[in-house]
Length: 570
Image 1: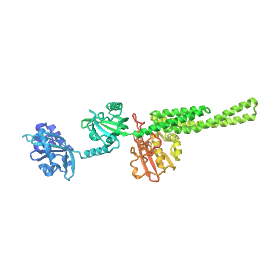
Image 2: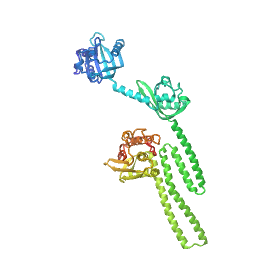
Image 3: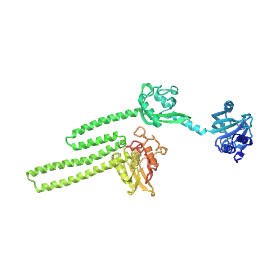
Image 4: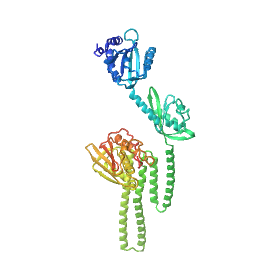
């Protein structure tokens, strides 16, 4: 007989050997003693404990040697005696009782929530006169469920849980009641169609199809019939999951009615502004057709960038580049116009007889004009090339080798209008030899967010300061990149929250609370690095990035989700 089987009482051993062969009985004995659950065998007539395992001691605090041979009632483990009574009645009726939540008392007086299963066994050969009790400690799990329930109830977004089988709601939160005007009692057990929640049924059909095909849906704009006859627009996310054998659907919807209305108003204002600009451009076409065509092409390019989903993150850069291009192109146009006038004047003088000094002066003016033209066109070409590189990087998220100093220079060039407007000065201390094999687009987005964050939060309105970007190699595989400012710093209470989504100290004044969260995701997920923050109130802040010189391989990374944006209080 195996060693483990000999460790259990003779009566239980005999019963095992009548039910199982020697090898399986030994495996049962091993499982009995090794199980983390409370397992106890008692006599039904009086509750005498025949055997208990180590799991019993873990939950109750009593060692098996202390309880075997004693009555269970001596240890007062049942907080509610009626719970034990109901379990015994169910065992007598059905032979077993399953998944009953009870409360058991520990030796130290503590109370644990436990899930109990029990079944009758014929241990003595005289009928089913004993019972096996198995209890699993559910205290921590129940606490987690309660925390989820409270969070679900208090979420400011509309939330609901429904069955996929019939669409009936099984739970909704307070926000659901507030937005729809329907009480929980009216909703539970009914479907959204019965409650006439969807304003546009075609939107619901599209959502259902996506949930059934992919298990969830993200960022769907939906129209809901709300209280008092209103129609509210929500941004809806949904995911299916399984709980206790049922397939359920959880929905979270954020009311974006006012945000979308504001967006439409901004779009209308932009359209009106575009019409004014086009009208003014048309007035100037007679004087400068070439410049007009350039500006029209630039506006069309900007319009296409804004409308294109892949280039949405570059909308703020277009205006900056256009502003920068105005100076060199305007200078070039002025010089070209002047040179044209001089050529016409020279032609008239040539017909009348031209002196040598006139030709010499013309050649001098032409050489000076050519130099100015080349200098301004070179400047415009540099701007276009920088913008083009940043655009390719941020929209394609392709991996390539690049010099860190060149990347930072291109980013600062595209941000130069914002930097000049803020009055901030940027210092660079970057080793020109630092070369990475990584993702320049996401890295550029992260740096842009950090610089914008410093401009918006680091310095009080109307005050300027210094932003320092420094980088050095730590070893052959890693570099340290820091973005620091000498601004107002961050309050100690906020330091642990800055990377959380939607956390902002500028709520309602341009801050969305997503910039630093996106930056953290880019650095840790895409670039394979770490980001740390240090700050002293009144003395500035410093974000330090530890990055591998060779980024990890990402199979199809969602690099387009975290987009670099203009200063927004993130």
